[in-house]
Length: 444
Image 1 (cartoon, rainbow, N blue to C red):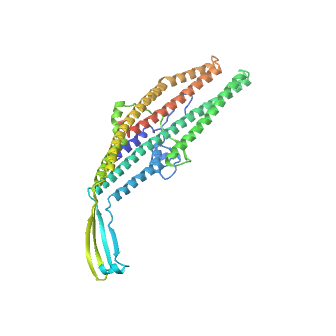
Image 2: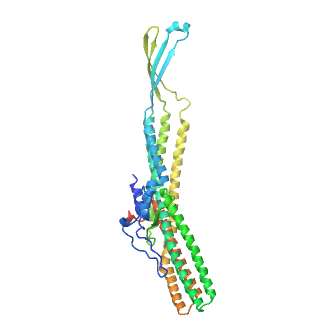
Image 3: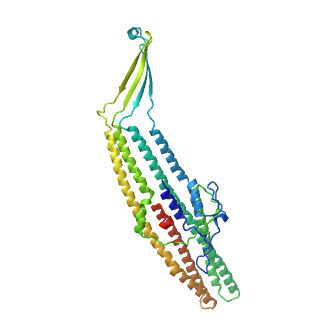
């Protein structure tokens, strides 16, 4: 029932997880290399064991599907509705009635004597109440299944975004690490030059401040990385992540489909199917309330035993409420209003999802353009300026402050580039959540 919605998302969220991120060198752009084959990674694919070593996105999603507490709660709701469907199909139990009369009073005893009456009564539901009740329960289970599917898509998208956060934090940590290493080398070089009397001690103070700043940035990025690791592990109910790193390719981006083509595919969103089922349930609830307006028949069969005469008689009868005052008109009107409310909520959901898609797409398109700008202009320019100033400094054409300034500019540009890449992949996961499928139809 849900294969058209759940599977494509899982595939789509794995599209950019192909290669691990290596260290980022100050002398070049992001270096991204091909990972080892899956059978050589340390990460465990078992859903019952905390993953260790390297973690891939499919592993994180598999753990999330099998161990996420929120998904487990929604899964139990399906079991609840299945039990309700079973109960709805049951016929009312017969009622056994025993009655003793004319005992304990001598005057009355002479009339008929002591009498014991045994009877069975059975309620017979009329107007199609049982069939309507079964249908309401069946569609209720269907709605619960769609609620689970909606939650599953949301949790998977959130888990993928948490994975991307870790991936970006890892890359940023490597970048800051290289910045710190370079700052340490610069301090050592300047310190030697100060001792040789080639530069002023003020230059040494400047590079030491830059080194202290780099160390502070390193502590901050390490803290952010640990926080993002714990947030990811929380998706499979873990508070102490055991994996050493995640593997993926932040640098791999794809051409965005047109917005109209994505809008046409919004019908794949499980919320649309959920509201179709919800409207059917409201229709059935209305039919059920109309059926309740038909009174039920109670049939009674029994016998009376006259103890004094050792004789008995058979009794039969029926009872039928007269729908004079209560014809269930209030509940029928209530069901009609609830049906109209569901129609309005369906329309509101369609508008909300469409608006969210438009906003997310425009934001993603802007981020895509930003990434391309960094690739084509900003990073090459910053790299070229740094290399030129570094060579000029060795030849005595530039001051140390110029080197530090271009170095800081380059690292800032690479840091912003990493943030843009992280935001891009998170936006892709958001759009796939809205569509319930892959961003590119070719990826299905």
